Length: 260
Image (cartoon, rainbow, N blue to C red; front, top):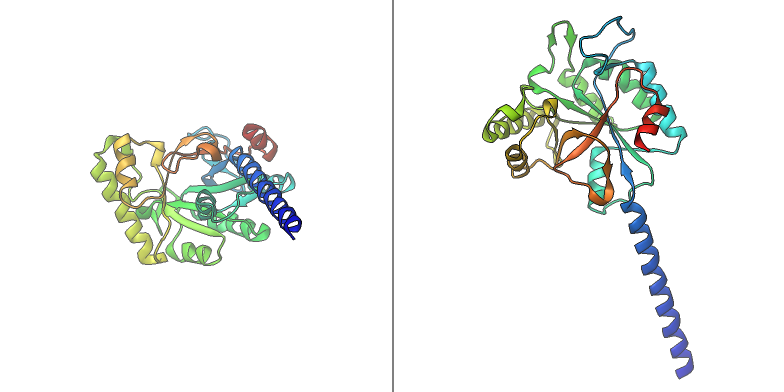
């Protein structure tokens, strides 16, 4: 009887030790994971001969679809911002090759050309809108209306976040004014799209100060995005989230090479 008990105890110790070692291995593997977040802006069907921004903020739907196909073919899993947030809280397991898709400014082209591609491949994305521009056409450029935002959000594929109310250089403003702008932008967003339990904010022009970061952190902003680069899970900082800007017709292979 005693011999059987000893054997059972030894087996239990072996199992527990094995589970602990496996958990530590999985934790280490997850900590090594890169988390690239891609940034796109406006989309055009025909690339112009010249561009004042050196083709950094426009792209084509065809190029975007090529990017998506390449990522999926190479084993990447497209996450939403909320899923990334849940992974940092260990509510879900982080995939071995995650990638996130984001769009800034809230161009109508995101709905007209890109939303159908998201539906086609059943992938998630985030759009950071400038609330003062919603539903307007400015200098010949059309922006998303609330109806389009609501339709995309209700699909479960698109999350809508703030890119500010006025789209100015926040490093030139007192932190309290930055705080007020972002709080007001989310108030407007929630009036049209419902309550947001998770809030991300992308700084216009990537312009910030340490004071603005503290102000937004203390006022309910979960993720702050304002730098260029690749995030690593073992050092992921919710107040210092990085992205990679995708210029016009950059291929999926080129993006993957930059990630690696």
